[in-house]
Every structure is written in C-alpha cells, then in structure tokens.
Image (cartoon, rainbow, N blue to C red; front, top):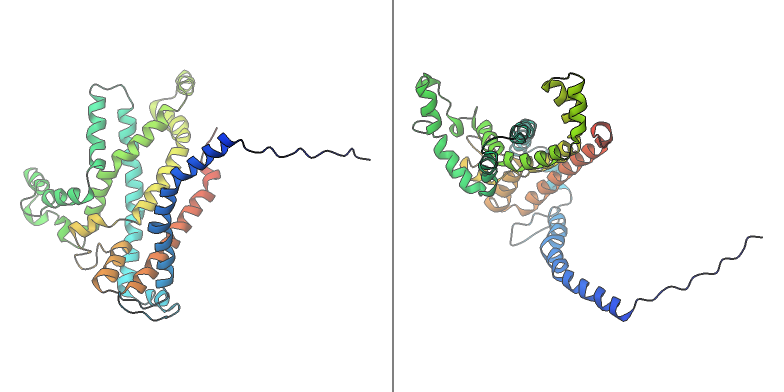
Length: 306
C-alpha cells in the first residue's frame, strides 16, 4: 500500500506580509482604475457601437451591416490597399536603414556618441513637428530637396512633386517616417550587437572569413531575436500611422495616402459615422492580431536563440 502522505498545513501570511501585500495592491489600484476607465470600457463600448449606426446623438442596432459595408466601400478599399503598400515598403526600409546605422555606429568611431544623438533625436520630436518640417523640405518649387536636385542638373519639369503628386505622395510619407523611426530601432539593434559574443567573431576571422561572410554567418543569425521584435513593432506601427498623413496630405492627393486609421478618423469625426468607424477599427485590430500571430508562429523557424 502506498504510504499516506500527510497534508502540510497551509502557512498563513503574517500580519506584516498581509500589510505589505495590501500596500502593494493599493499602489497598483490607480493604474487598474485608469486602465478600466480609459482602455477596457472604451474597447467594450467600441465593439458594441460597431453594431449600431451611432452618430454621436442617436443610435439603432444594425447588426453586422457596418462590417459588410466595408467590402463595398471604395474609400475603405483604397485605404486598405494604401496601408498594405505602406507596410510592405516601410517595414523593410526601416529595418534595413536602422540596422545599417547600428552596424556603422557600433564601430569605434570618432564622434560616435554625437552621431547616435543626431540619428535618435528625430524620434524625440513630435510627428506633427516632423510633418511641418517635411512639408518645407519637400516643397516642390523652392524646397531645399528640390533645390539640391536642381543644383546637380535635374530640370525643373523632371523634379518630383513629393507630397503634391499621387505618384510620389505615399513614398514621401514613407521616407519621412523611416527617417524619424530609424533612430529608435537603431538603439535596439545596437543592444543586440553588444550581446553577440566576441569569440564568434574571432573564430570567423581565424577561419579567414571576410566582413560580408561574418555578417551573414555570425551577425545576422545572432541578431534574429532583435530583428524579430523590431519587425513586429514596425508592422504594428505601420498600421497605426496617422499623424504624419493628417498634417501633410490629409489623405490626398485624391486617395493616394489615405490609410485605415485616417479613414477611421474621417468616418468618425468628419462624417459622424461612429458605428462604421468602430467597425473599421475592429477590422484593423483583427489584421494586426493576425500579423502578430503569424510572426510569433514563425518565430521558431527563423529566430536563433542559441
């Protein structure tokens, strides 16, 4: 027969431990209250409103009509397509540019600290200020960028119109956002580079590997956890882009820079279709969730954690 095991009596918390626990919960209580009031309740209300035709004053339950309406709405389709293009272009560019900066500044360079500050500083500046500066820089006629292009011999009629053209407006937005965000992700990559053991580089150099082979066989695989996290953050940020577009293009010219969050804003506060705007917001939430789940699922295949 199996020997009977006496149950150990549960240890009661001492009065001092209980007091400490209660004090900790009291410190956390304001944060929980703030989360409940400003995050949890709006999320639940947004979901409920998405099934109504609420316009700020009155509402009527319409079921899933708002969700079905999206797929027949040309403005929504244009915003979705623009957002996909924006994400597929801006994310690789941001990763590549920030990684190049990190690799360059990770070396022992004279003035390295100064250049780190220079490249990180745009991330500390509000996107509204960045947008205003960008409008001046990319002004088609007298902007510094086109003046520089004109100085190297490009004729006026061949100069890009940047924010003013349907062909270049979205690309210009991408350029500005990549420049602003690169400093932040550069710091993340530099942290990843600092964590790579130096003996791996020494072994590769002994084997006669050149800089290019060292990057592909040592640096890049060892940076995969950092790259994975940066990719997720970049994709999420790419579907939340709004302020730069609101400041510079207002979704134009035409619909060339209208994206999902800007469409939500216009539907909610331009046309007062709160129910329809909430439906688009939850559609956007599903997109971000799916992308994140796919990336987490693929983590085992391309993230090197050794």
